[in-house]
Image (tube, rainbow, N blue to C red; front, side, top):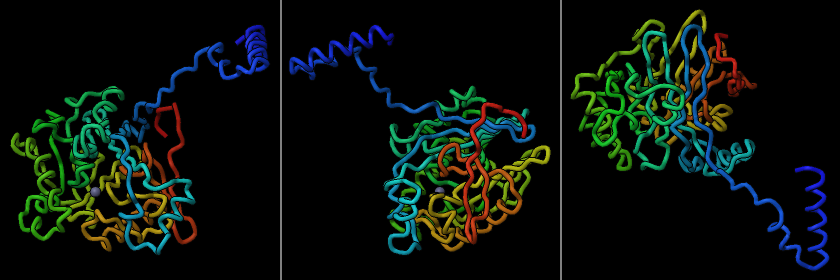
Length: 329
Ligand SMILES: [Zn+2]
């Protein structure tokens, strides 16, 4: 707006105000730009040695963490979120991670797909495309575990979303979700997870493209599966190493960073074995903070890439500093 037009608007406003018609002033002023209210495409890129890493957002879902987190003192969860300037329910990220090794395209977890309905999360494929890749380019999917927000994106309407990919998971994880006996033992609210998990894996199994391992296992050059049972019986994490750089894909070792970094003993209702999950979390925090490697986490605020440092007797998350310089560091 030039000085002259702003003066004209000011004079018009003053005239209308003088007439008691100030409410009409906006009609004379330039129309307001409509608010857009959509988020930026959800991908974030970094290099780890020779490997290109792309964090892909599947979106966020509202979570009543005050109800889901367990083992906290009364009011502790609410206080920790308030201290982080967040109100409940919090918007929890669902992140997946694409690794281009230069030879293969690997996807660690797949987001939820339609598991929560078509309009909740379900952004992974569009963000994969925004990031410059296509689902049919993915050579392998590495599952941390078979929960809907990690494996739900494998399959849509019975068809594989990644038509050329092999799907890797720990044998213990596949055995658990395939077991009718385990399903019978599971609490009522977790029983439907068995059918959902089996449906996600089915097209890959039928096509002979399901691969199981017994962690620890070297899967590809620079890619190792490690076992971290607790959240689920065959929960896996994946370590990536290239040119002296290391990144560990954590799966569900953390669901609420604002609470579990300061108090790692707090567990979540989704854990199969809460105390074991807490032990794995504490061991992972200690290892990551001592060794200083990168961490990629599905439920830490997107892109979920960063480092862990000690904070007194507890821990703190340091998100990756945003950078346009996508190069080895
Ligand atoms: Zn999970």
